[in-house]
Image 1 (spheres, rainbow, N blue to C red):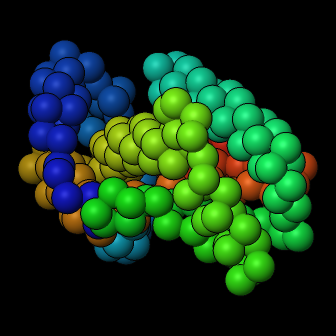
Image 2 (cartoon, rainbow, N blue to C red):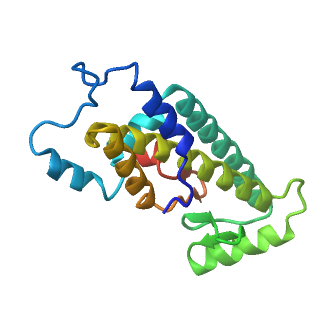
Length: 203
């Protein structure tokens, strides 16, 4: 669940509708054809993947998504190179994520996990790889939250009907939004950064 509902984004959207007719008929916000009640109920649980993809593809978000993707590739290259120089040979994939208390968590096989932990504990680089991984995760979580908010506005506008309905549906969508988590996965030769709205999630 995304804890903070960005009301300013929704207010800006609703204010824009006083001069912009989304439906092309009398200033009413367009609703889905057919059984709109069922569509509204169906859309009230989660933000759809399609809405996430549209929000992530919006110019400002897309620029940030691609910049973050380039950043994760650079971090992975540095990490793979440093581990290789230290004699660390990964047998599989290692997943890095940020815990609720902002510490880096590692998921992998026991052997890979032990090797990576030993490498990170001995790391003397500045900034350290742990700090770089944590910083990247925070950036991804912040971007994902923005993407989910924009996606929720889009979905609420499609199914919400009246302004009041749009507001209610947006609030519901944000309350049920995916817990924003970012997973940085690294193997011997590959890497990815996955979060709601990421290039990996869209693939």
